[in-house]
Image (tube, rainbow, N blue to C red; front, side):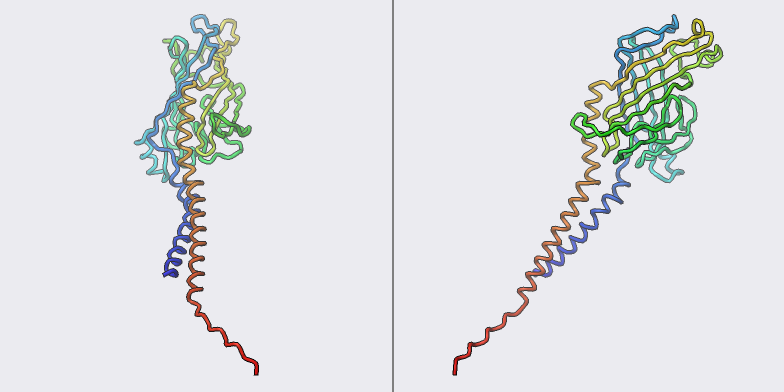
Length: 328
């Protein structure tokens, strides 16, 4: 009976030991993915900020500028692209809406971001765009890959429509989470004017005909939770200028927007709580279950060998002791 039990335990030991690497290296890359119908929003603020007054074409200091970012998954578009791409795809329709202190629109830039649901690598398909302009992304945007590494990544900048390195700057603690801190600096670059201007009757084409151009620079900072690859906090030191042309007095330059943009505190709290819960799910597949199954397999193997040894000792017959010889 003990021998049968030891064989059963040995079978379970082999099963759980084999399941451990399968969960980590086979199941995890296939199960961990971004859901195609995800929706999230984020509010960021610059307090105070510098903003252009289009009535006088001069910069003025305002108490705050609000930036509302939304990401909405298009499930139907993702299904359509998946049929030709042959892999799980996510399509995010993003919108960055900038409002002045009076709540009126300063700029509005839509994006369509198409990427692999597992690796977050860009997937190039019809519809990939920024503000209506077709783009060909390289690198990541908005989210880092699962199990983020301590290294530099390539990050897409929507204003310049180009990609540049974003540098790993060290490990920090943020809201009780161990996070990786990344920085990217975009030098002064000439960028397109938004298609939707805040003043009626003024179009990007009309501004460009006057010889006025828009320039931009930023330093962006992200605190990324490495297990999920999700940023728990983000900031930008952002600056835009209008330069030259007949639109500006004397053809000089004027600050269109400048400020230190930070996530609003309530959104930081909500993001940290969400990332903490998602982190547990990822760790189940990458750490808790694989190591747990490996330890369980080792314990079952030890118990199987113990029962087998006991059954062998019981099966060995005892020999009678030889009688003592009496002296002659």
